[in-house]
Length: 271
Ligand SMILES: O=C(CO)COP(=O)(O)O
Image 1 (tube, helix red, strand yellow):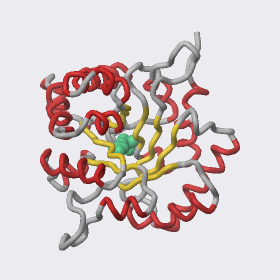
Image 2 (cartoon, rainbow, N blue to C red):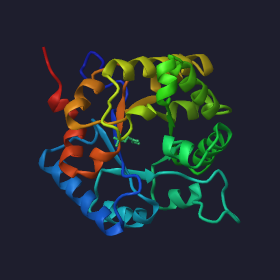
Image 3 (cartoon, rainbow, N blue to C red):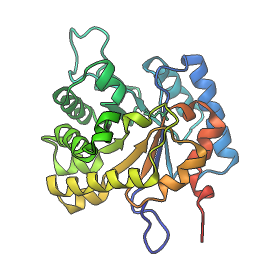
């Protein structure tokens, strides 16, 4: 992350937990309550670091009720949305429904959607646009598999996904968008990309946004890293100048561990 002379962050850090297909709606409420209590005990400043969770669709109504009832500052979002607004699309979820449930964000193009559900760049671009149509901010996920990393073409590959994902967006939308770099080989494997790998790609994404839009957009878009993030590696990754946040899978299911990731600032090594 980048700080200005007064110690404030230039872009507000964003720490997000992707619960994937874990936690039924009862378990989800317990997890969120524990997370909120832990952060409250630690006097977490939500104005300084934004905290988001991405529960399964079936948990969202319960999450909304808890967030509203207890006036939590945690924001939340869906893990996917349809590129369509309504109609005969069995099993799909409209961005309008997510908006109505108070979702601030939605994940688009997670590698598990790209691989298991064969979602193409064209479909993902339509989903990004659908999210904006319904006033839900998309978190566009990009990243390479192991073979591409080994071939050394990971930057090219990831930037191609980025270009396809943001095609046709306005500068204003691009500045609001969040992009998550998640190298597939580092997801759920315990294999974490080093802070320098995260920085290399986030810097490349920012430079590409400056080319596709302009410098002002590139300076605003928040870029996340995801892949085997834990409390013990979060601070080092967040110390990189172009990394503005973390998209956490497994470790977000443990409220104490996730709270420690949110509180990465207390783990920063100071000279
Ligand atoms: O895919 C991820 C978050 O979206 C990362 O998952 P893990 O943190 O479990 O590696």
